[in-house]
Figure 1 (cartoon, rainbow over the protein chains, first blue to last red):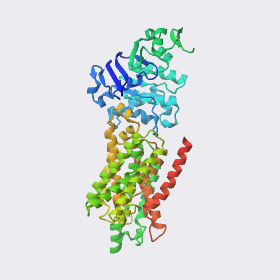
Figure 2: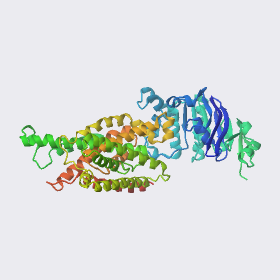
Figure 3: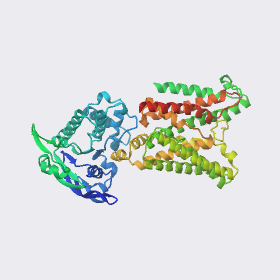
Figure 4: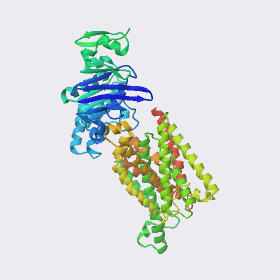
Length: 252
Length: 316
């Protein structure tokens, strides 16, 4: 379990994350939603130790991340930031094999190769594995990065806006993979996501942030209501039930 | 398979290099050298070949490392002020310790080139505009500023003549006893190989590196130390060799990609072949005189550099 205990972080005088506490359930998908500037990405960066909080603690399986070695954390938690534009010419397989770095420190063993092969197969990248990343489309690139996190074999996978710049088909594909990772492999997945309908359909829990504070948290059914979403986004939307899925209609 | 051709080419050129020169030495003479030939062969030809190979290998690898760490294809010891800083360091050594020993010169020049490179990387961090062509221009300007400071002090202390020896790379001055310092860079190549994965991961960004449990700062520091030290050694023994660390890694990157571990041996080989070719060319073009290597590499290298820039634009 990930326990976030009263985390605060400010830039100058502005508190970006303000006394946030939340518990993340194992083997579930938890989505962080909220308007721009709500502090979602910052919170994710703090949970993944890429940023340090001003106050508060993050515990992973009862261990404070501040007191855990970076190398050991890399075997427990993986984070994928908003697809950083990549200028290096790397093959897909090379990228995926970097996922084994926390274990191999650069010297790949046979066991590492098995993990790499599995991750590539899981993301259906066999045909593309020798291609360079700069020759791939946005969706293929995103799949390659997720394959790397799978090879990293961590219990917790954090993704910062994984659907950014993807079309619907690829977005659905990515979300289905994440669902499979949680359901079949028991991974705990945290995502920052803008499209509330993707959050509604594919996640188990939703944490809604606003102005650095938690506005609401709970299961999809608890959060995807007109009232709560009005509080979070400050706009009216009607919630329709289609095929047992809650769909927000926010076009006014 | 491409590597096999490179190795063959390297052997052929190395062989040719040993038998090109004013003193007539042909392969047939190998087993019946007279005293003069023996002396030339061991005192000049062999040291020259070895120093060419080491300089070509280390400068190319340094360029590759710099391009990964700065995440810019056009950053190299020439375009980041590393070489100019090293030369400034040599000048300071000459002024402060009037008769500086090679070791003293090396240490002072190393400290300066390391400081210069760090300064450039710091400037890089602060620049918001990460345009691939803008960054090396900043580096060139930075290098020119340091270079003018060097000229200023050299002028004041009557060392202009002395400094110009380090301005233009030249292998013709290499004789036994004057190049051995270059051997220090061989272990650096080994370290570069061990750290290859780390440099590539660091090149993917600090967050990316941290996610994989890599000590980012350490990787960057090791990389910059390798770059600064090997550049210093080349500048001290041979002089400035521009564009080598820029052109070779870029060519290798096109056909081998940017995973340093895969590209390292190709970079080393191509670097050695390229500089050896330029050196032989410089030796035969106006035979029996010589064109210094700095000039040949500069002309050919800048030509390729322009081509790479144009190609880059086609991409974007």
